[in-house]
Each structure stands twice: as C-alpha cells, then as structure tokens.
Length: 319
Ligand SMILES: [Zn+2]
Ligand SMILES: [Zn+2]
Image 1 (cartoon, rainbow, N blue to C red):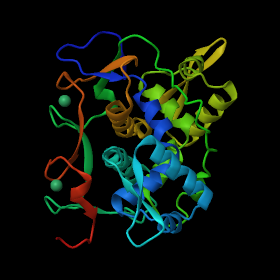
Image 2 (image 1 turned 90 degrees about the vertical axis):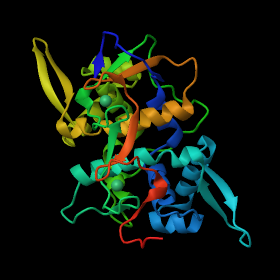
Image 3 (image 1 turned 45 degrees about the vertical axis):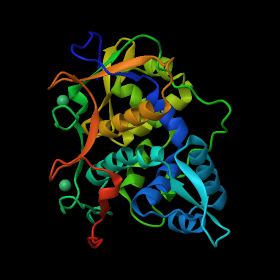
C-alpha cells in the first residue's frame, strides 16, 4: 500500500519499474508455464516441452526466444543429440519464488475441489510443502496491508521495450489443456501484460479510472475492459465514491490482496536482475517490524529458507 511519509531505519531502495521490467522480460502466461516445466520437472527438450504444454511450435519457439533473450534460459546441445534443449540460468532459477507464490494463490483461490494439482515436498524437513513469502527480518508472512511503499520521486510508468514484438495475449483457456495446474490458474487472472500492470498500480494505491490511465499510459478502452474483467474475477470490487457526477473506484478484494506475494516476488526479482541506476526508486517498509522489506520464501513447516533444489514433487523418493 502506498504512503507519503518517509520510513525510518535503514532503507533499501528498489527500482520502481522492477515489476514492469519483469513482466516485459518474462512475457506472458505461456512463458510462466515453460519456466514451470524447467524448474519443477527439469524438462528442457523442445519436443518434450511442446508435448507437455500442448502448444504450437511457433508459440513455444517465440517464448523460448524471449526467455533466452531475457537471460533466464540458455540453449544447450546435448551430446549425441542434434536437438537443442534449454536449461535455466541463475537468473532463471531465481524466478522460483514468483512461481511458488503464483502456485500458492492458485491452490488457495482457484481450486477445483480435487485438491492441489501438484503437491511438493521440502526435502530438508520432509514435510509437504507450504511455501510462504516472509519478511527476512521478522519472518512474518508479508501481507499487502502491512507493507508501505514510499515513492522517492520520478514516475513508475511501465516502459515497453519498443524493439520487442509483442506477442498476442494468450488464449487463457488453453493453459490447462494438458493437465491441471495452479500456476496456470493464477495466470488466467494476471497472465496478460495489462492485467498484471494494473494490479501493480492497485498495490501502489491507485483506485480511480483516470489515475490508472495516467499511471499506466493505457488506452481507455483497454483499461475499461481490464477493470471489468478483474472485477468479474473477484480480484477488484467497484465502489461509488461520488454521485454527482457518478464516479467509481476500484479496490482490491481479499482475493486480490492475496496476489501481493506474487507482485512482491516479481518486484524483488526484477530489482535484482533488471534494475538500472537511473530508475525511479521506491522503499518498501514492513510495518510490524519497521524494516525495509526483503522477501524470502520459507517453508511454513520448518521455517527454513527454500531453494528450488530442495523442493521436489511429492512422492519423489529421498536420495
Ligand atoms: Zn518484518
Ligand atoms: Zn521445511
């Protein structure tokens, strides 16, 4: 949530455009699912990726090209094989927290009554994994209402990379064609560029149509469509704040507020890998402990910090 006053204590300045850079670099919902395959199932062969995702070769080629250009994956050639496969870079592995927070939201808010599509296990403690994005200083879960964002001047308008051809908004109904997945369900909500940027603005305290328009530099018709869609999905709720002339504002619901750990993970990731010294800065303050927010992904069972290497699908035998 936004605030005007400056925080006290040590301040970690972060890029105010980190989220939009992350969105531009990673790409749309299909890119997230490619990363899901690489992180959780260690699948990197083109044909295998295509089969598991059930998408057109051209779509997969475009997403892999974007992820390669963005620095999250590199193309490798297996010895003895002519077909390339793709492996994650350190930057790609570091996207883990974004995937985990997206999976958690999907598990919580988009369940279909058949349990979690993917149960993971934390190898360190052996427990079924419940991953929580916590404050590194006090280890409490990071909640939208308990984080204050202080802008330190400049605009945080998303900067589109004009040189990059923008892929069409994906057909979101196809994301679960091959198998159920909570990350895919989350991407049905946030998996297009404008929806994710609109939610970023909402987390910064923007509520009104004209403010969204100004903040995002978005066409009115697109903004109207996204506001209706996110309201229909139960992520935003509309409230009349003025009757003459009638004016509405859009507030995050509980379901919407719970997207915050995904937003925060993307902000931290974008800040680590994509920030420029010239970026406008923001400082995030965790109200309960008054520290600058440093998000860490922890296991709710043992409180240990999670890395992708000690998270395996449930049922994987111990090594
Ligand atoms: Zn804290
Ligand atoms: Zn654990």
